[in-house]
Structures are given as C-alpha cells and as structure tokens.
Length: 500
Image (tube, rainbow, N blue to C red; front, top):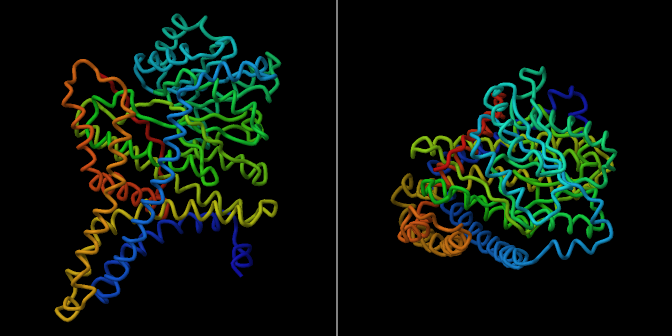
C-alpha cells in the first residue's frame, strides 16, 4: 500500500516525506510526553519507569561492547604493524592517498598534522598527500601552502595542492565540496602515474588529524588480509587529545563521549558507519564519483554511496588504532561552548542520511530486505534516541508527578516512582565511572603549564555528563532534525581550531 502510494508522487515529494519523518517522531514524542503527563499522569509514570529501566539495560549492554573494544584497542596499539605487513605479498604495491581539506586554519594546525604523517612507520615514498584549500580562503591558504611545500615538499612521493573554486552551482560550500574537487584532481595525477586504483587506499582526514605512527601499516595490513578489501571502508578510533588539556571541561566530556560512542560501535561493525577521519579503497571512491558535494555530512554519506552502488555488498571494518584530533576549543570559555553546540548540531544533521537511505532502499530490489531494514532501523532509532532520551531521562521524568492529583500520588507506583528512578540513575552511574577511568588513561602527556591537580579535574568533569547530554546532545539533535523537517536546510559550519 505504501509503495503504491509513494509511486504516485514525484521524487522530490517522496524525498521530502522521508526528511520529515525523524523530526515528526521526535516532536510527537516530546509533546506527547507532556500531554500524557497532564492528561493521564499514571500512564506517564509507568512509561517513564519502563523507559529508564530500558536505558539502564542499554547502558549495561553498551558497556560490554565498550570494554570489548577497549581491550582490543589496548592490544593492537602495542603491535609493530610494519613488521607484520612487510612480509605480505602485495605490500610494495600499496600506495596511500591522504586528503587534508583546510579552510582558514592557521599554519600551526597544518604543520602539526602533516608532521604526524611524516613520522609514521611506513615508507613515505608510497604517500600522495593532497592539501585541499578553498578559493574563499585564497590568500591565507596559498601562503600556508607555500610554507608546507618548503617544509614537506620532498618528504612524500607527491604533494598536490588544490584550490576549490567558490560558488559552483549546485554545491554546498564545505568539506564535501572541497574534497570532491580535490579527489578529481588526485585522480588526474594517479592516472598520469598509471597506478592501479586497486593498489591505492585513500584516507580523508580532518585537518587537525594526527595519525598514530602505526596507522598506515595497520591499515595496509587490514586491507591486504581482508577477504574483500575493495568493498569496505576502514574506521579508526577518533580521540580528541591534541588540545584536551587546555579545553573547558564541558568540551572534554562531549569529545570523550564521542570517542566512547565510536568504541561501542566498532565492536558492532554491522551497524558501523564511517565517521570523521577514515580510509577506503580508491577504486570504490572512483566508482561512486567521489564524495557528494551538496550535503553536510559527507563522512557518513560516502559509506551509504558505496553501500547503494554495490547493492549492499559494502561494510565498515574497524581499526583499533587512534587518530588524534582537537576538542572544540576557541580560546575562550563561552565561544568554545557556542562552537561545541554548532559542531554537535552539524553532526546531528547526519539525520539527512535517513531520507537518502529510505529513498534508495525503497527503489533497490538487489539489497536484501533484512539488511535494508537493519540499517534503516539503526539510523532512525539512533537519531531518535539522540534527541529524545536525555530529555525524557533528565527533564521529563518528574513531570507526571508534578501534574498528578492526590489520588494518583497515593498509588503505590506513584509513591515509589522517585525511588525507582533514583535507583536506576545511580545504577547507570557505573557507565560514568568506566568512562572516567578510560578517559584518564587516554590522556596524552600533561603539558608543563598544568599542575597534577588537573588529573582530578579530568575525573570530576564527568559529573557534567547529564548537563552535556541535554544541552549538547538532545537540543542540537532536536534543532537539526527540526530544520530538516521544516525544510530549513543546514549549511556546513567549519569548527574553529585554536591551540595554546
């Protein structure tokens, strides 16, 4: 029935329908919770208790995956991957294409990231580095590019400088458009060099990304030992250690929460998408005509482009080594918080992938139904929970008791509800305890201008987690989904980079 109905409407109308669904579900839930709390508070009390118990079980469930990934991470980070990969038959054939898009970043950020590439334990004569700038940042970029050419021009096999033209019709100015342009220019160079596409792994890194010394050896080993390397992207662990000692506690909690979320998903590759800095086969990138240049969340979309292009025969392989990036730090406390909100809203705008998936999955007959359903469900449930769960757990949980009359308040369930909710909250604090321990272990060496008392702050900061979940979790997610729902599309916002 739904298929018959959708077939009667043009593509833009059907696509808009899919864009509306996530935001509609979020607002229906939040407004419904308020209405039911007033109209039938006892029903709402039952719902809140069941919901909180479900989330307690879910936290416990996710802790299992977090600890599993953590053990693998701690093991793999000690291995000399270059020794392991050098003995593989095709090791000498593999080249690495690294794309670094930049917009208004200072030379210190570029220099740090490229220096980390220059220090990796991998033959640098197999590297093609693309520094991708924007015409909108013409003078600053070209000045920085000249410095990079002088300092690193002879470090790698090839250093390619690209300048993405401004105001191309149909593009959204941002990272996706920039790396799309850079990717095509890199392809021209690769065709001149006559390197087979199958022998190239492309890594698209945020400009503040600092690679672990063994990253490319580990990536190459995984690629060469994979049963189907051309149909997989490769996702490392995103950690935020570059400026973590200087950023505000709130920004540190949000950044570490992102790392732990990614670690839980690495242990569940069947639901894993590409995120931020990651790697993939160059042949797959060419097959899908590079990253989309008209969306905000190109990092996750590129996986879906390949998934659709190969009729579901595409996956993400976890890599248990870190890529270190910057926390959101703008030099001042309030500016850092504003930027943190904007970054979270941009990430939450990944909800735009739901409409893309629903549209292509609905039209595709080659992708198995269960695979389509699982990915659609994971995407929809993920963005829905992101927006609603913290609001229900931390804010709306007490609402039914406020509206309940004396008759309802004297019932056994209403009387015990505050104690039950408090017990569930306390039990869920185990997850915060684990997070506090892991985040402390992940810290880079302490800069000399900080005292040892800073370690105490790094642990106590997790008391801010409930606040962060609402202000920098639910609210930007609701913001992003509402914008998509009403057609007020979000443009790409570049996170400001600042280091002391």
